[in-house]
Amino acid sequence: MEALNLDLIGAGLIIIGAGFGLGKIGSAAMEGIARQPEAAGKIQTAMIIIAALLEGVAFAALFAV
Amino acid sequence: MQKENVAKFLLACLLMFVSISSQAFTAKEPQEGGDAKVNTEEEIKDYIDHHLADSHYVNFFSDGETGAHYGFSLPVILWDDGVKVFSSGKFHHGEDLAVIDGQHYRLYHSKIYKTDAEGTITYGENGFPSNERPLDFSITKNVLYMLVVSILMLLVFGGLARQYKNRKVPKGSGRVLEPLVLYVRDEIAKPNIGKNYRKYTGFLLTVFFFIWILNLLGMTPLGVNVTGNIAVTMALALITFFIVQFSGNKDYWKHIFWMPGVPVPMKIILAPIEVLGMFTKPFALMIRLFANMTAGHVIIMTLLGLIVVFQNWIAGPAFFGFTIFISIIELLVAFLQAYIFTLLSALYIGMAVEEHDDHHPADNEDIPVV
Image (cartoon, rainbow over all chains, first blue to last red; front, side):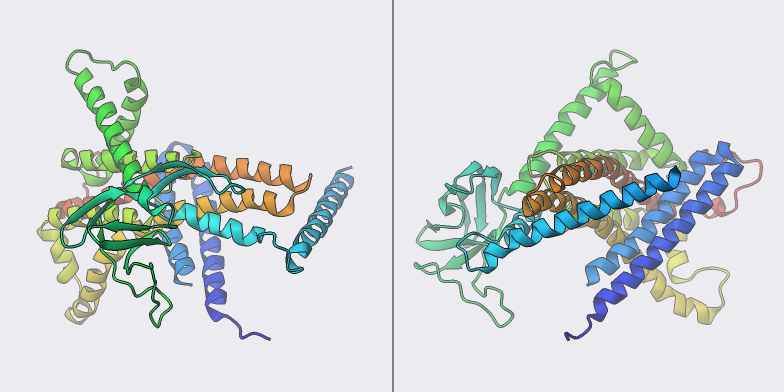
């Protein structure tokens, strides 16, 4: 059997974490918009910023492999 | 009723999977038998790598059987004891050596190396060619498309700006562009930068449209992959970095090196982290744009390649459908990445130029609506 490639497992873990985080951002934003539809634009912008920052981490993990 | 549909769907999926995998298996067999046929998967991988890399040719398509390339050569500009300009057609797609002023140059994996008369490539210990490389300032494919987009933007937006001399409402393509310009100004620059937003709107508009148009060009069959090149995104991120550092006011630097309201031991620990943060922000900008565009291109090309790998009546339409689906998502991503890059640049500039009192806006003050 070949040796386990721990890099790939680490990258996978980070991507699972990032996916979980993106899900939480999305759900929180949805709840926020449902509670206060008039603030939808503001919430959306904030959501996209956080999602982009999180995505940066996920991509850094992918390219570190 | 509902259950029945689900069962049918699952059965269909299973059948599809079985037929695809069996077909894939039969397709592979003749290659393992030492057939002269080329390895399809290798060829697709090469094709994708070639698309992602910069090149000295604009190649629209190649005829696999005759080996003919349809496209045109681009000028090569080398700095090697003086400027040397010649057409990349002299390389004949890497098959020939270019002899300029008695010096031999060889195009090897899209990079130009200095060689002897036989075109020998020597390899170093790390497996990469150890031949000397001249400084390459060539007009490559990426440079060409960047120039095209720059000239296009200069003409279109220059024309739009001139129209306001005589009329209040622009005509023609200006009617589409005006709302976009206003969107960047009012939704990105104004709320994030604050009262000095006019100074930076020019940069934000340029970077937004430059990235967006190049991202959209990447969706055409011209083979453009400019924003998926890390050198290009690094240049864009560096511009943001320098603008942020040079427009940083006293408060910005104070918050980096000696932040107020923090105990002294913590200040010593936090200062290096803040200094590191100065560099990680543009670094993240660079990686984000590069990785998103590269990933999009790889996904689309892989899906298209799978049609060729499987070669059957189920996989073909299925992957064709997937490709269309991903292409539509990519159109969204093309806009989103331009928007994110501009928005984050505006945020970083806003952090650097904000006045100290802006931290605690009075309750009666109008907070700009995003």
